Image (cartoon, rainbow, N blue to C red; front, side):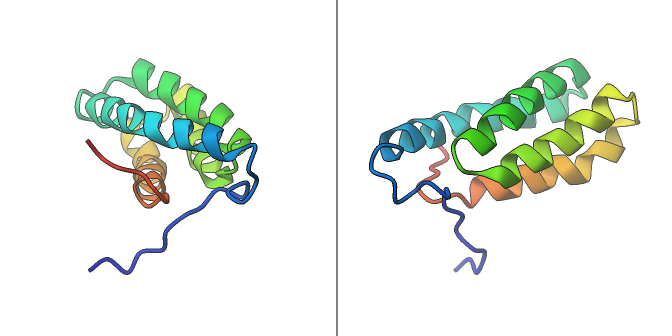
Length: 106
């Protein structure tokens, strides 16, 4: 049994945001799969694109840590740091997403 906390959107109790959050969380599986693939392929361009998208959307849906981790990784990638420098942020991003309430890997 996992003891990791379950992350909820800060807007989870807002009836108007609930369907939007549900759609966002449902789409995260594809982004996680793309992120993992890009990491395996050392594909900096795809990593930057995915992190940029997550940086913009995470906070909008009430998941500020998504934006924070994605921004940190993206900043390192854009500054041409070696890819391993961005890995802690990428792993933190994945860990956070995988512990979001109602996140379902397919």
